Image (cartoon, rainbow, N blue to C red; front, side, top):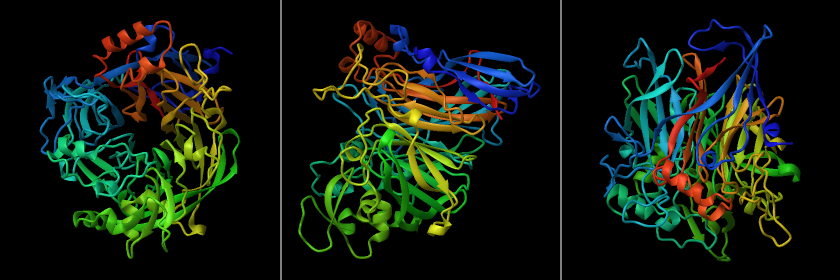
Length: 628
């Protein structure tokens, strides 16, 4: 089968088709018709869609729309006197080099939202929408520096006020400014995000710095932590020693008011680990959180009160494998880590708690009573909990404590989480099945697949198990159609590659990362982040007919980030999507005949790779019809 056939349509069941008005024929269904993989040098270096959306009406007629990617803004652009993705210090002073303000090249999590009372500048023609975007890091070095700058600089987030054309739904940026995180000690490696049911932006901080090492402890030989908190602290606070590791690896929550004023808090009680995002279930209390990196966990938080993440109970999952075939499956049980309020944990940090106050730790077996061997993202260690430190361990050393209590910390590259409220299901992405998942030991014993997998979580009532939620995951299984298309290894143990250096098939998911679910369309959207294929894509997968369609291609070497599905904003819908770090590792990985031309075009189009883009998939004239 050819690429176009494999990337077939994804059916979307809608009740009505609405643009700026609802006076349209009743819709029976909609299909996303997938597009081929990029072929030309221009396609390989661009962000674009050649997919289509077919609307089928109940009166027997149909209409097909060509999809198009719309750029809203790019990093290092100047809007209203502010630099998009511009970085700031603790005093909200711009960080600058000889070229001006330093800007991130990695826009990530988006929250497009309607704010009650917010007005457009021209209300006759436009509605007003708000867009919060967080910027994960800056990969390229500032002027005069060299090497990778991942984790060496503070992250940032922005508020953009958008004008939404009432006729077409097209979006334009009317205003832009930085969101201050000075009151919460800055923002650290801000990754994906979700829009809470109460209309706030729930952010994330990945790859939390190792508090043991920050406090003077020895780093393990097999630690996966390569962050640089000294550099972060130097740039943000002006002092390499100032930053406290326990202020990072948390959940930032941002609220926007009708005047466009942003306020940010950080939640400690959702735990501290390499969180991709927090996804809130329909009860507005239960949250699932993926943990990125090697030897990580799956975590669940249940708030004490709906729409309030300031107190609750934290759990870690135990994987009990039932099969290793086709990505594997398991039953899940949950280990309670602890209950607390933000104020309690923040007080511990403010009063100067250190790692050494929580655990005795050794990187070799001390052969002493009370020590337990654990293997996590921070390596293999022997830990002994100090008296009365259970609460501190649960919320400040969450992954270590989960492993200490027997939870599974063998997951690799656990990324986005999404949920289907009607089917009582959630979904979680594993970007690569490797290392702790594929080493033949421990709880998880699966065949290696560098293309990753998307897993379905079965949600059940947890009250019989003593868990106060109706959305407790009891089982986890790979979705066969979304198992990564990794080509595997040859007889010499080398990765198989096609003629252009791709190590994954073009027409299968590879490196699933961002996940978002549209209940109205019955579609799971998947954004990729992998170096195993030259171009990353956004896919639409219908969970009922199980068909997959490629709907967006990003520039070679770039990650598809910032995925968000907005089903109905003033009569229009949006598939938000960004890209990060175009051209990354292309010189190393790409073996196509047009390699020199591709590299030249990447540098030309994306300002020597410093510019990355925030935007959305719509029709050629503007937005998609509302999904309702």
